[in-house]
Image (cartoon, rainbow, N blue to C red; front, side, top):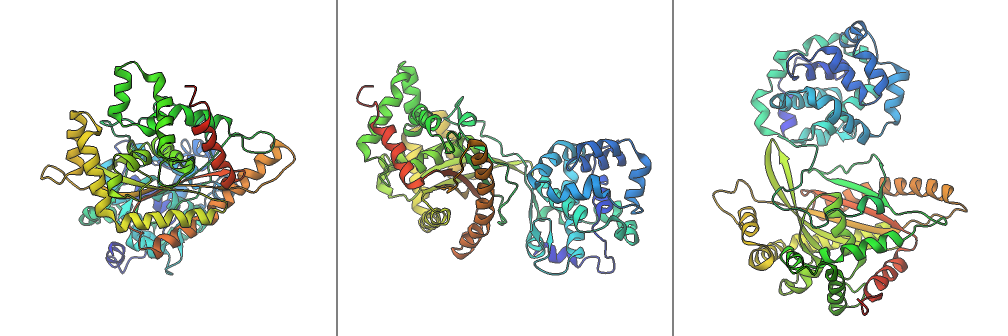
Length: 503
């Protein structure tokens, strides 16, 4: 209830959250020698580079903006802000604004802006950007780039800058510094999720970016903990998705999917790397039929592994094949387990990302199936952790890596915090778009994908709430198919049955 406490601190002062108030708060938190015009220009460049560059050299215009004498330019800022994607603005915040701010004063900036935001809207469902007032009141974890994006878009679209003229004088260094007593009650998250230095991803130098094309959809999950939702698609040929590059990618990466790091290193040591893929396919074939659930032979399980490593940069701990073989006695519900290293408040922490995957014709059916798995993982979390600890610390890694993992996974006085449980989810579904030519198909496909993600987000949020799973981070990855049910079986048939006998 941090927001409620702060909201009542200065009951006699109602500071309007306008563009000038945003910039002034940030100015009191900048590094030395950062001028108003440089800061103001940097903030505007997150929406429009050209106009931001103009402001960086226009003292008079910046002065009028910061005194609330002028409004933001309708043509250069307000209208572009209505159509710009939040992800683009957040990237600009990372590039232009955050480098100007003093890291030790970031918590004060977040708290002051939270305070003003809460005082500027009154209804629980009213929003500052994408954040409702009810969520803002409870917010204790801030991603600066994303939070500043929501505040900027609110001040550009929802309020005129001149409205703040009566209260802009209340935005002082003393006002910002008054939140010092609250800084320890919030967390500042890094915008960029960093890879673990001690544990590399197994899919190194792969063709992931050449096979999967990401859609910049600009949507976000409104969950309590930092989460992500990503959308990719495959090459398009003859007005349909082309699976040739995907098939080659799966064949090239199957060895890393099936084998542990110790086993992979053994192939290298014995100079048998070229046979690793063929032997991995034989192992999968012996494990079960193509597309057989629980064996590691489902396409969704393989793609989840790829997206966790290549999209999230979370190194594999256990794939579904390893879970179904060396860890079979635990009867785990997880489709994989990955380790995500993050920076929060300048300190390193870790998440154990447990995976669920589903490929079905309808996107909602896939989400339902994935959440059934996630609920089972959460119910059996003690067994899932025992499976991770027992399997990893016995035979999977070399002695040095095992010792490092033990420090993270096993409780000890030296460990600062236990790794949080998070969820990685892959959803494949049928896109159901038809067109006569490639250009039309590509245009309509992207439009349909964006609409699908926009519709899926509230449903995901609803499912998380219904199943009492809202206190976890989620990393969702979506990939459409021509005919998901048919294609997933055909792709795995070709992978497991094609060319293995002759390898």
